[in-house]
Length: 118
Image (cartoon, rainbow, N blue to C red):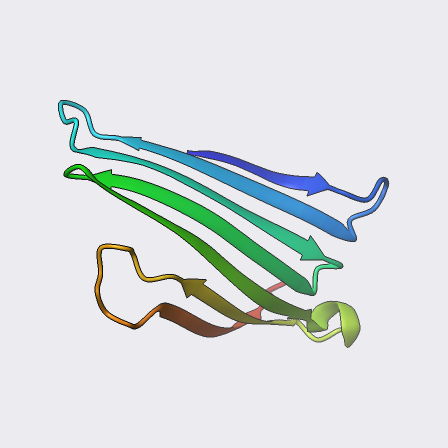
């Protein structure tokens, strides 16, 4: 897996950052499993995070491709109020793989509270 982190889109600023990941899957001694995954996250002023991704898997001659997306809100109270807490609220949508016949999609909501020890 390849991961690149910390790419600043605005010159001399950390207001906009992006990270990218690429993964190539290929099982040894098998022609029945192959895959490719790509994902990215763009962070705006450390508060808003936009995520998107794509995956393609070939399993037993069937090909499955889906797009994924998400959004996050990161509130660093240690910068705003000098209080050692970071609150993160995230949403992620993973579309149902094409081989599934259910009408459901995988949607995740998470709330995370981090306490900073210093």
